[in-house]
Image 1 (cartoon, rainbow, N blue to C red):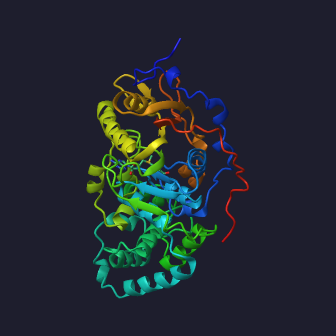
Image 2 (image 1 turned 90 degrees about the horizontal axis):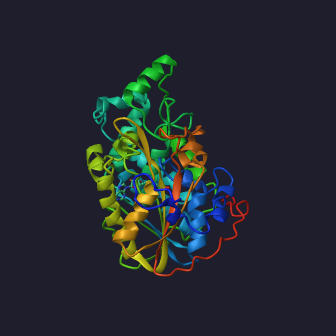
Image 3 (image 1 turned 90 degrees about the vertical axis):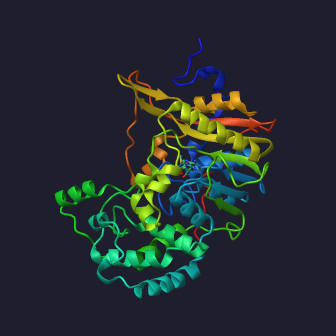
Length: 425
Ligand SMILES: C[S@@+](CC[C@H](N)C(=O)[O-])C[C@H]1O[C@@H](n2cnc3c(N)ncnc32)[C@H](O)[C@@H]1O
């Protein structure tokens, strides 16, 4: 008997891709943390592993094709596409996502970085910052010594209105060292994936006798840059990528320009991107309230459906004829008044695609990737807590595969994950 998914009236049996069994382990065979060093420029909560993007890019596109991610987050898809001789297009409405995607896809080359950094630090040194005049958020004093905060404030002032590729790269390098758990970071010991609240960090610091370290930006930024560029970066990456900052309901790409979409839309209200990144947003001079208004974050299933319907129509429009869209989405835990319910977001989106667009649903691959391999879990070496509803169902991630026209649904690519690791630059 077919089972109806929670939150969608469609039957799960109808949605299972005919060839999922053989597929499931493919990207999971990649060694933990697989991927180019640039992917690790700065953490992006909610990002998917580069191996997953790589797998679908290899499977559904050819060299020279264009691969688009309308919700590009940390830029995993466009970077992975460009590294493998495709055009990589990324879009995200969120300022931190845009900065990070742009930086990864336009890395400053190793010889020029130190010179540029020194030039900007020199300019920063002459900014008038008497008595920390520029400090507009006192919570930052919980994370930084006055010595380090003074440098951050000055550099922020210098880079404020500069959106040149070099400035975007330096801003992203700074996002990668602003806070974290070791001496590689500018803050006291805290998380790197998200910015903790000042109250929590203050109490934690008091309890563990943590001191505010006096650290200089220069060595930390150079170290981060060198680690990010440890692997060889093909010279065409910048010219083969395009990153935009728009609403996914209205993408700034012409009709029929993408040969493949590999993306991961927001899963209702699972992640609070503006709050999780409040220090990075402050650093990027972007008011959190503005970001919150732009980002789609709703617990209301009908509103979410409406939003995804518009996005799917837009994706259909930008896709070339006979091509594929892969959407990675996680189940969502919903608290009802008397119980917890797990919603199968992929099934909800599949239903929208089937009913309101010309996409055909090829299928859903359950358990898209091992939760242990989520980028922020790997970054922080966390143990991920599985979430369950009252019936014991776990939240898992799923890949929804949609077809426009009749694309070639080729067999699995042969990927030798060890060989496809990048050599040191
Ligand atoms: C699950 S994350 C994508 C992560 C990405 N695949 C990666 O590997 O880093 C979803 C993204 O959707 C973005 N987003 C939310 N609402 C949006 C909208 N209306 N238009 C464009 N992007 C949006 C968020 O900023 C977030 O980066």
